[in-house]
Image (cartoon, rainbow, N blue to C red):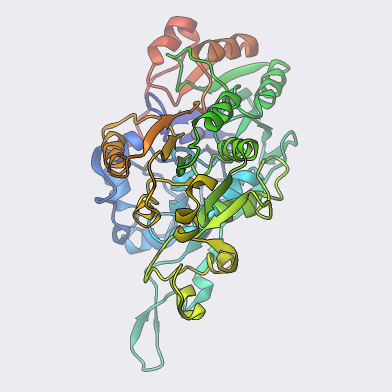
Length: 483
Ligand SMILES: [Zn+2]
C-alpha cells in the first residue's frame, strides 16, 4: 500500500518534501527549503551554522529527522552513529530553492532524478556560489583531517585533497519516457513554469496512480506542455493528485508575451535601461532579448547569467540566446581589487575573478562601456549588482524595469525598500512588468475537474480552505508533523 507523507509544503508556499513509500521503497518528491520556516529564525545575516552539520536545521524544524537520508560527514561531526542508506531516490520537479535547495544535506549516494535543464540550473548554482549550502551537484566532504609532511594534523581542503569533491548521483530523465525506482514507475512530463525544465509526474504505485504537478502554469512560453501533461493525466485512473495552489485565490491572467511587449515599451530612449529579472528564469530573459532585438538595443548580462546560458544551450527543452549573438554583451562587475576598466597587467586583473569567470574575461565589457553609451544598453541589474550604478552613473531619463515578483514577506519588503533607495538615489524611473510562474484559481479548478482524481492533496498553498470549498471531502489537508 503506497503511503504519502507531506513533510514540507502543506499549508505553506514551498518547502516541498513529499515522502512516498511503496512496498519498502522510499522516495522523496522534491527536497526544498521552506522560506516561511527558515525566515522565522534566519536571515541573510543570521544563517544556520555549518559547524553544527544539520543540527541547526533539525532544531528549527527545517529538516525532518529521518535516518539514512543525510550526508555522513555532517552526521559524524554531530556525533551521530553511522547510518545505512534508507532512501532509494529523490525526484526533483524543478530547480527553485523551495523544491531543491536541501539536496545539499542529502547523502551523496542517494540517486537524484531530474530533467536536464534542472540539472544545469543546479550545477550553475553549485559552481558559481562561493558560500552557503549549495553543494547541489557535487559534495565536498567536510570536517576531515590528514597528517601533513611535518607530521602534524591539517584540515583537508579541495586544494590538498581534490578527491573530497564527489559528484552526486544524478539520473537525468527524458520527458515522456518512463523510469523506475524499484517497483515505482514514474513518467515525467515537461510543464510550463518560471524556469526551464519544470516537470509534472504520473507515478504508478502498487496501490494506484499518483499525479504530482510540481509548480506549473499555462501562460508562459510553453503553456502547451502543461496542456499535454493535463491530457496525459486524463488517460490515467488517478487516485491521488498532489497539486500546487500558490495562486488559487487569484484570477488574474496575463501572459509572458505581454511582458515582452511591455519591456519594449518601457525602455529608455537615451538613458540607461537597468533590468531586473530572476536569473534562473531564462524564459523571462528571452522576453528581454526579444525586446532588445525589436528596439535595437544591446543586452548586457552578468557572467552568472552567461554561465547558466552556456550550460543550458544544449538542452532541447530550454530556450536561451547564443552568447555569440551581437545583441548579447557579457558584463564583468568590479570585484576584489576592482581593476576591470583600468590599464593594468592583465594577469593581475584576472585575479579579481573566480575560476569559472576567467574564460569570459577576454570578451567582456565593463561599467565604462555602458556608462559611455547608456542609450545603447539594457543592463541586467539584480539586487546584487546595484553598486555598479555608482560606476555607470546613470544619466537623466534612465529607467529600471522591475520584472520580478512583488515582495510577499517582511524580509522581501525590506529588501525592496533598500533597492528603492538606490533607484531614488540615481533617479531611475521604476517600471514594472511581471507574470507569475503559477496557474490561476480558475485554471487550477479546471485542471482538477479534467483530471478527475479520487483525492486531492493541495501543497504549496496557504488556502486549503478554498480547496475544501471547491472539492469538499476529496481534499486531504491534514498537516503531518516533521518532528
Ligand atoms: Zn517554482
